[in-house]
Amino acid sequence: MSDEQAMSDEGLQDDAAEGQTGENEPRRISKRDFIREVALDAHLPYNVTERFYESFISTLLNHVRAGEQVNLTGFGRFYWQLHGGHTVKFSPKGKVDPYPVMRFSAARDLGGFLKLSDEEVKSTRVPGTRLMKPGTGKNKDASAEE
Figure (cartoon, rainbow, N blue to C red):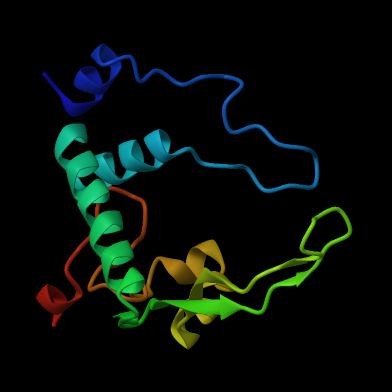
């Protein structure tokens, strides 16, 4: 059974209403659809990709919660920062105390990659990876080409 058939059997058919937004808003990708796309691109079963995704998020958050900065070379860094709080009208205290927020700072290469045309992307390494041709399911290790 193919990965696509297995996912269909698990009830992962496309939901026509899912991912729709207003006219001027970008399309939203659900967690399930994102994991499905990664699984197909990496030629991995959905359940393996889902397990990796859950572990990746958990590990990332554990490090950030511990006050560590997680650097993903060529992609960006994740860290937490204390938000200063603010005043509010309808609260007995009259203010919201400072609280931590998760931050992401994109690497310079990532910004440049986002501006490329579809044609330019085909010959450019995906930032933070050794892969070429993002999202095609035909990723090649860039070091194998040298």
